[in-house]
Length: 309
Image (cartoon, rainbow, N blue to C red; front, side):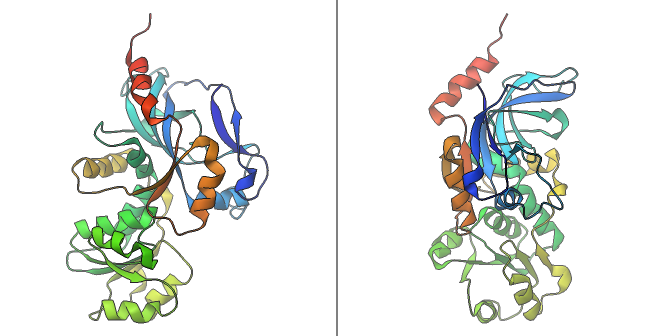
């Protein structure tokens, strides 16, 4: 039986269960996807805890996860842009952490074959959010930009996208991530008490934009440093998702212009531990769930692509 992550009450990671569910079917205009990798995001933890119940109330038993990459397993009537066995990237709020998901065909993006599964899945969530944040602050060549939480899933992509636009990027993170940020071409600055003074020292000529992916007073610090309010953005809205944008990001990865740092990879059965890790807020890169073991992926793809009479 296919598996899916569900929770039947609000709470911490301990309320998450991996349960057996019927295999869904694709309806007209839809695609059934065999999920290979699904993302794990801090915002999903907030939904599960009931923090956002007024905006996004749970309907128990509720699913979990948004971003995924997988293989097309079945086509609904009228779908002509994909074939069974195609590799795709998608975004389905509160449904992605499952062996099979049904998605409208027009919100799926092709996954380039030369991008790894673990790097592809996050593009529809942290990739899109990072791109939207960089767009929102109108970064240009020669700008000095600060990104808080620069070693995390969104931050590590935002710093790269800002550098692609010619910006000098300062990233705040824990001291243990300083070397990692330098490898991305970023000036590392330790977060914590005294951050404003350290940022002034790192940017004596001023800061043009501040992208806050971490919270905890960073916007106030940006304003204290004289960053114009229109240059302060705290996590871009996720409603900017389009498959075209995902395809653009995937092309950058294919061309080695953008890397997707992947932190920990957990099997689906360890979903509780994956969320404990992401909720510690000290991760490097993106945490993901593997629903198909790497050594089984080639055979699965070959089986799906083999015509059956």
